[in-house]
Image 1 (tube, helix red, strand yellow):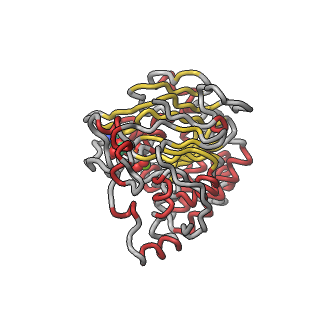
Image 2 (cartoon, protein in one colour; image 1 turned 90 degrees about the vertical axis):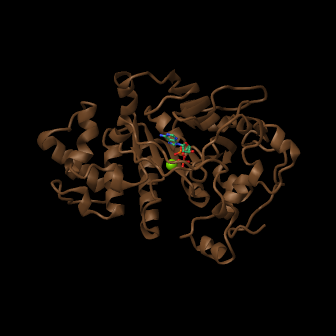
Image 3 (cartoon, protein in one colour; image 1 turned 60 degrees about the vertical axis):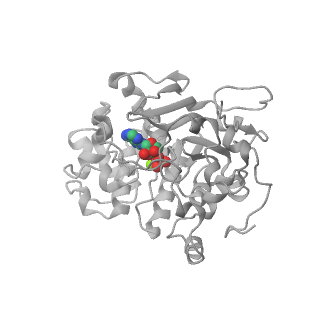
Length: 377
Ligand code: ADP
Ligand code: MG
């Protein structure tokens, strides 16, 4: 069953009735599934496209498969089935083949405390991509100059290049991580929860920095977050993920204001606890997503592989996993959905293309509505 994105999202295969301009996808997932060793199905038939020069947000609670998408897009893992392309060509196998592709991709990960090697000076951390990809400015005096310029561009002018990332606060470290991501002039920027570990007061500075970089450098951006409110500020198009599947896609603002999939609505209600709206919700009792896991076994994630370690990827706490055939034959959200009926438990809903902009996988979608900012209809 194909979970396709509407044409604006740069999805690969064009079907009947797909009229109008389709920007080519720089990174495309075509019916991609990923099963980790140990039997977890972390991605289940995902089709996504990051439009060239555009932005795509992946949003969903912990365990929904967002980081797995990022790992595949970075070439750190390979799909179990389906096809992944970069500018139309299949991802090459092996490190050597991947190197030119990785040069095109800068990435900023969730936790700057983990993603920056504490034993490396700021200069070496930031210049490392230049050395790996044998670009000018990676060594010697030239590196000092290039790194100082890059750090100034991310709001750290005059930083001591011989100091260590540990000298900086979370926000400072994330600025260093952004400098490192951008130094090789990538064409794509992938951000995996880049502000989730930061104080609220620092979050918007970092988001603004990323948005400025995107605009000035004409980057294509894949942005991952669990925060539906944030995603609307950052990207044009959103794919809502749950349990390894894409359940709804469309323009960020439309998805946030008028979700059609009940899971998107639940996600909207379950804003982060540190959000002003979240504090109000918390005082009224937990939202639907604060009380339950993603309906699966919440086992521990095995240790990170060599490649993960190389990319500074921390092993994440175990979220929900999917096992067994039942996961394939029902709506993935049925067990938690207030609108579920027998059909939802017996059949997997296909991705329904509502119009050129929006698709959702639901037999009983919410009626069109306009929600107020506090989530009330
Ligand atoms: P998210 O980033 O949305 O929180 P992930 O992509 O990290 O979700 O995880 C999706 C699912 O895959 C979860 O069930 C998680 O426990 C599982 N998972 C993630 N990484 C691994 C791994 N290395 N080995 C086994 N299972 C994993
Ligand atoms: Mg994640």
